[in-house]
Image (cartoon, rainbow over all chains, first blue to last red):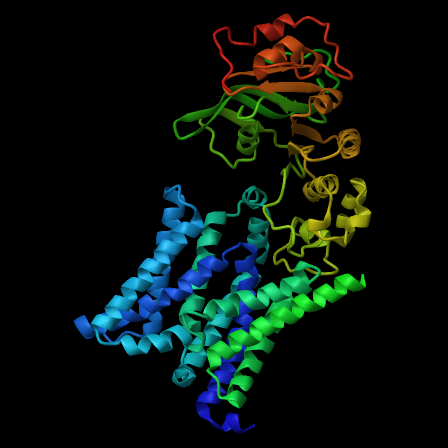
Length: 274
Length: 276
């Protein structure tokens, strides 16, 4: 395995093994709650977070970790959208659409005014070369947080998704859980950005969970299968991109989609066989 | 306001007492002046037109909505005293794989961490409650594949896991065929007879309510009349409450010739106009 001797390839492969299953596990709940578009929008507007990082650097000379700025901006945007959901009569998808397109437009303008237009490509599609050992630790921390949240809040959150009233009568604060969950998506976006890019990263969240849903017969199966498929897709995506010399983020996404299509076809055959 | 005669459960201890209960959403007074007591082992039908505040009343009893006036008193009884809630439907997309066993295991008492398992610690309890609602064979089915009637029985089994003293059912017969409705009726009777569970059931199915209920509470936002099914479900009265044409012209079991009970007449405010 040649690529194991190349540091950034090794780091990228390890990243894929950490982020693939973590994003997929998060994705189970994102898809159950119908928040795919929400997570996609948060991912896209990570571009604005990066732009704001450059702006702070330019204006005040603050060299803040872009991941942190992306995280803070994602949280602010998620909070703003939640506020609009509550206070206006506009449909959630409408609110999400104008919130993220507006913030991306703002980000692009800021980047171009700062003369950083050329880095947009890397933000949109991810750049694996920047994957350092420190990034791996952040990704491991994210994986721990997602797994911890899942185990700690699995019962209340599942109940809140199934029937919010059944959760509330047991004293479960469903709106706080929803907010915690939106924070978790924002955190995932900021940590996964480098790997898959703003345009594509939500595929890592949504696709394996969708494939898992097709194969699984119960919730237990869904919770086990989705991270497994996410792991396989991300790991093999990195290997394929090394072999084909193709961009890593998009290759992982395509591998995910290929697995999803295979699951769809196999479920067709299974139904036909029955 | 309460009027009930010779109710079989009249001598049973009172479980829940609502006194002058009011619930409002901001400035909108959704429910006002509800006086109702529910005795152990009593089945009470809650009827009223759409928007009358029936579901609001259930949610207030469950503690999901703040009370703006009056009181709700749930009698403390040693042992389990939960109120079981049977919602009309789940918010979950029916194509999501979620088994009946997994759903029920969510409500097992005394569990710290929950993981969906093939063999959860309270499996015997789940099996016995499923058997009680004649749904033992559904344990491995997915929630999305259940018929309306089967789903309703599963949600009752879910509530039974916590040994409730009172079951609240929100329009359980919506979208359920006649057979399913009869199974539900027998099931609620046997829960009352065998376990002494009281039932408060919201329904638009007036036949079901008149067959099943010991007493009926008719709610219309600013008024509440309580009495035996024959008293409350008198045609003229229902006509007045629901505002329009008859509802029980094909009544199976209602005695429509009986005049409106005087005590009930006095329960209807003279100046009220039905708000529909």
